Length: 536
Image (cartoon, rainbow, N blue to C red; front, side, top):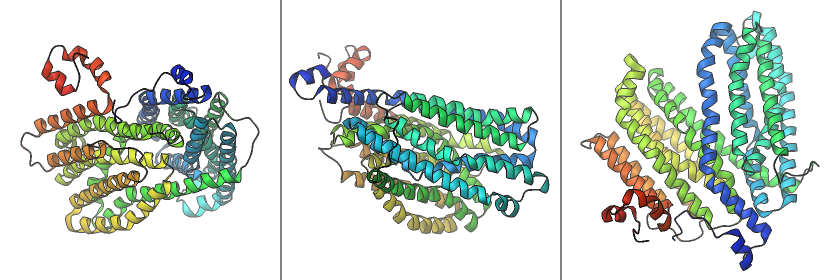
């Protein structure tokens, strides 16, 4: 059995009998193996929790606009935007709590679990209260001087913002509760609550408007949903078997570690968001708004595709944090398996989208479709492979505790990207901007791989997942260049080779033999291709 194959360790009872581990340690590691096996299921739950609110938004937003009118609806969008913005006020402490609590749970350090949990809860709640007071004091000036709101809506808007801003401590508190639940692996519960609350964020305001309630009632609906999320997460924490005792403690050593990790993470997130969204403003200023439309519309579609990857990485992070806490060699095995799994999933999706892009863009944009928009969409789809791989490597680095490295990388990358983007956009328009985006995404991936190399333990396989991802990305980029005859056949070959490599990467010889026994039958050639021993 090779190190690169994902496999199940020895039976816990055999380990205890041989004296390898204590019973307590073996039980904890058995829990980690269960987390590994449940990654796919938990990812499915996470995807569902994001898809459900999107479907609700499609159904509800046109009705809200019809009931409220343009100005009132615009004010309501400010409410929802503010609530989304407030989720960023945790300054990375929620993810920091996930990492340190997951490692403490894995090591069985119950007192450390208590310190990290309550320190994060108290710190996040305190920060939320301070920010809430500041926004509440600034509300009258914000509505009167900075928001162009007609006099008829100013009073109710002010009252509504008072309600919205009062929920900030709940938002930051929820980040801490969520961090603990993720560390404990309670993703099904998290996903159900997130899905229902996401749907409620649309349907409750609609219900409030339909019973002839005004903006204040809409704000009350948002407050109700936010309070319900916090209560549900608190109940979920009480149901965790190894939850900390209900005796708050503020441990400054724990606070310092979480603030250090979360602070660097916040820097990385802020600069990353600036690169993701700032390029559109830069393109608009140097080329024009028509170019922004051609650039941003396909890029938004790529962003929706990344829901699958972000959901997978959210599940992966606490698991890899546990393995890093153990200094387990299985960390590298899980990482390589994650890269291979994502590559096998996203490659056929990307190839299909590149082949269909000209037709889909024509149907979607109709008369507004342009050759630049088609080219940009194809480049973005080709780059989505390395973007997904970079997300997995990014997660692995954070699980190693090196959020500082990703922050320094993004700080160094930001001015270079802005300069290259401006030059390419002014000289080559949307096509140049899209290619620079692809270059930045590729550079992200390469740098993440190099940084992870510093933290590796054990030997690497001859063909690494990162190298395979690079080869696949190059193949899809050749399809974009349209220099490949019969692109559909070429794409099918890329997908077939990717799946075959993933099959041999993820499974050991015994598991391949068992799974291939039905389809291989007596075909010796197929047995050789699949890497199985028909006689085994």
